[in-house]
Image (cartoon, rainbow, N blue to C red; front, top):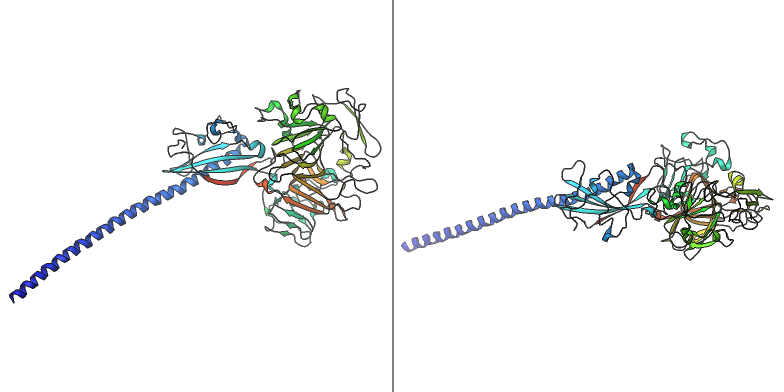
Length: 588
């Protein structure tokens, strides 16, 4: 018995020892769990804070781009401002951008540890700064901005390409969906249809028309039949929509036209003329002048990166002052020597890549002036005689036609209206253009008319780009004989961004003859003040339109292409990039 009692006591002691160990073990585990939970909670809180700062820093960077966009909208000339010491604007010390600091301090242009940042409105710890690269602005209208956002210990950056929003955002743009009163006459009021103009003054799209890209009209669009609109369509009509004239409905891939504000046309294209002035480098930001030609000028693109130019009345291809007071003979090698320009064979020069060609009317005074006597013989065969006794005199001081060969032999005067009164005039700043562009991007503008005298195509559809801007009409040249037959082949292809500032884009003699001229293909963009007819239902003119949008215009533009009166900037590309700055503001 005694021994049994001792055994129980020993077992109890052992149980108590085991229990103590178990209690200590469980307590230790619980302690570890509590410590882990606290650590996890603290770590999660830290991670949440870091994630919140990470996301907020990117939002601050976006806010910087938006703030810069707002500055551009308020002051379009703000494209010239930035910090020239920025590595983004001036990498490796090479002058790429032409930015300069504005007179009024912009804190977003700060650099370095002591440089300033801009606090995001409504925030206490989010800020941004940005750098500007305007090196491609003159050529493409595009500005690059690198914006860096900072929140707490986090820094993030984005690079954005901003481009002027304008006429080439659309394959098809019109101010008024009516014929040009200067071409067809008539008593149509100069107002939008949605504001009270009658339907009898509105041109309609035909059932076979195919508009292969975005379109906008400040007016109400009229269709008859299943016209195909393959891109987004907008209208200045506050009510939106369109009018089918009681015909079958049109086909809209992106839905019925929606309202978008009226886009205002510029008054003239003469601001492009300043791009040929050698004295405008500082005052007008023209570091590299283009080519100025005077009077009727024929330009034919060649397939070797060059163009043939005949411009007999041109004396100087770059000038100083407006009106011009002096010329610059050093430009002859770029734009053609006057002696070669007036020779029958013309001058062969390089296409002025990323630059402008401007054809002006012969001025009455100044260094490019000339005194001419103009006569008209049978038909419309104008003869232009130089009576000023200057060095331009060739062929006994008399030129047949308009100096560069128009009208063609056997051609009868163009259709009634403004062109027949002023077609092929001796003093006109008319551009006659055709050929295969090779060698880059160029914009060509005329103070009077642009005549597309043949196909215009690109050798390299990725690199070549053409802008055609007429102060007055842009004509698809379609000359006719007295017997009703035509002097040029059927079908026409035009690769270009086309703009008629004061008038219209249309086909010459589109109501004449009995010959269906086939298909008019435009690969690019068309913008015009008035809707220009290209054919009529009785079978004359180009009965089929094949308009295709050059999608490159979403991101870039022909050099110095004109923009609407009110300019806004849209973001074409957003890309997050490695932050250039440390948290203290110094470069990494």
